[in-house]
Every structure is written in structure tokens, then in C-alpha cells.
Image 1: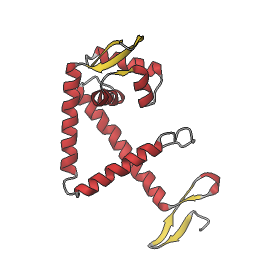
Image 2: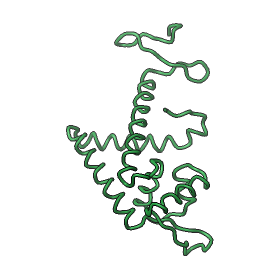
Image 3: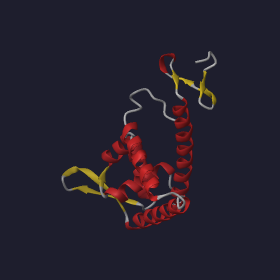
Image 4: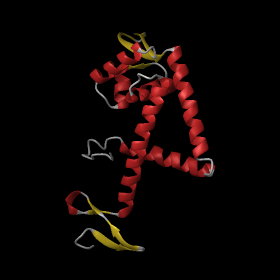
Length: 177
């Protein structure tokens, strides 16, 4: 390792970056950070586009709530907040906005009269489904040159990454942004 944070690699000098305790991160982790950062930036931009396709006044962050409701059906607001990783106040504000747009509705939870279940309205379900079908078609077009096994492997690796990321905030990681 050189003093300037570089080391000799198989194809020349490779830059490393400091990690905790003065250690240097291997170049593959630098590449991972760079690619994940780009992926997340693009995903945030696409989420904004998809939110606008559902409704011009829909906040991008609320799009994920609609997808969750489409996939899982009726949910308590506290369960949605836990899934997304936001507080009750933030969730209440987002759900109020979604109700005002006519995309979700609330009903009493039959298992607990004090709680409410949130669900997509018919219009909300139609709009979310339409956007998701278009997004999947886009993935098929963009990855048509990939072998199906490669797509499956990418999905598997991303699932493992998502499982592993849970709790990074508690570890003191700052995330890639």
C-alpha cells in the first residue's frame, strides 16, 4: 500500500478509500459503492416519474406505499410505517395526502376496533397496476439482450443485498447517496 492510498493491482495502480480504523477499502467495494449510488439516484428519479404517472400531485415517496398496498393488500398504517422506515406522523401525513387524491381509503380493522386498515381504492389500484405493467415492460426491453439466468441471478443478488442492508443505519453506515 502506498502512502497516497493506492496499491499495485493486476492491471496497474488501483485507488482505495479509507474505511474505519484507517483501513483501506478494496477497489471492488469502491466500485460497488459507485454503482449502487448511481442505481439509487436513477431509481429515485424513476420513482418520481412513476409517481407522476399515477397522479400529477403524488409525492415520489408515497409511490412505494401504493406498491406495497397493491402487493400485500390492506395494511395498518403502523405496519406501512415500519416497512418504509418512517415515523407515525410522516405516515399519517402521506396517507392523508393519498386519501385526498382518491388513491387510498381507510376502514376499521375488524380485529382491533381502535386501528384502521389502509387499502387502495379501485382507481388507485388501476393507476398503480398500469404504471407497474409499463415499468416491467421497460425492464424487459432494456434487458432483452441478457440471458434469463443472468436476470434471475441479478434478482437473487439484489434480494440478498436488500436483506443484508436491513439494519445498516444502526451500524453507523451512511448509505450511498
